[in-house]
Image 1 (tube, rainbow, N blue to C red):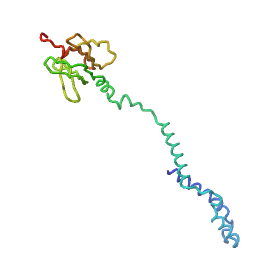
Image 2: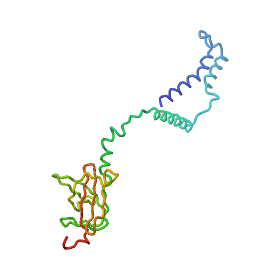
Image 3: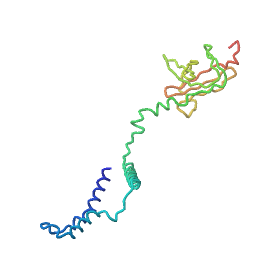
Image 4: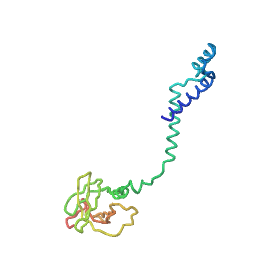
Length: 200
């Protein structure tokens, strides 16, 4: 904005220069008569004659164009700092990866070893290691539905993802749940509720 004001003031001064330069050279004895004085006065009064007046809309349009060019130039000259992944992320990508792909769709009712039922539905599976034992917790929303003991393994079950959980058919009485995370891989067997026989 300051630049525009300076430019406008400069144009104003340049336009008044011809009238100042045409002043009579005899400064000691006045202007040399009424005619010369009238000519000088007319030149001063009509200094802006022949110039087009600029409306507010035209001024605003030119101002917006100049500002857009300056903003574009600033964006071009803005140096790339390279903070996106290293500094600003602060492990956000890893924590996102750690919590990804942990939802398990259970297509049939299951029964945990302690008799807790795991009804048909979708569950967030959270693996937990406690006192050298591994558990898979089945959550719906923030409610813990069941905690299932699991067996830790180094086998990745040929899964391409770092974090995974799947239900795999095992036999008529049980299903196998395989689980993988950044911390550990594990598996467990859970009974199918409808196929539980008295001797199991």
